[in-house]
Image (cartoon, rainbow, N blue to C red; front, side):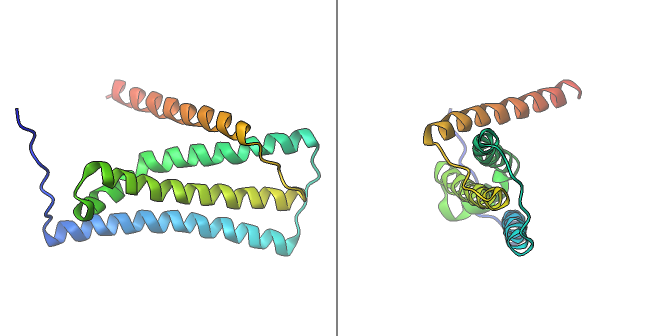
Length: 161
């Protein structure tokens, strides 16, 4: 049985709707960057500071990577279709379109994490100290956690229909 090829040529109205959806999603992602940068800027002006123990500082390094992992997973799950539906017109290959879309979202998620790390470091007055192997463990944990949560939510939604 031959697989049907997607109709990659969209009419003008459909193309504009998909472009609008992709741009809204991109603006949403960039709005979060703006908010985080605003928090960082305001904290530098106000000088909010919290003294923390070394143990707390150690756990804050987990928080930074966990935020990256969970945010990246959520943003990919809920928004990647917005990019894919629009970018498929340009790349005309599902795998390449997925790669480009995920790369955009993960790069922005990484930017969130870097800004969050700076915010935390500014607030505690010290670098939170990043351990590469701890990052790997927390990333894997966070990725499995978000996949499990989304799976359970989808299963619950399907079972309740």
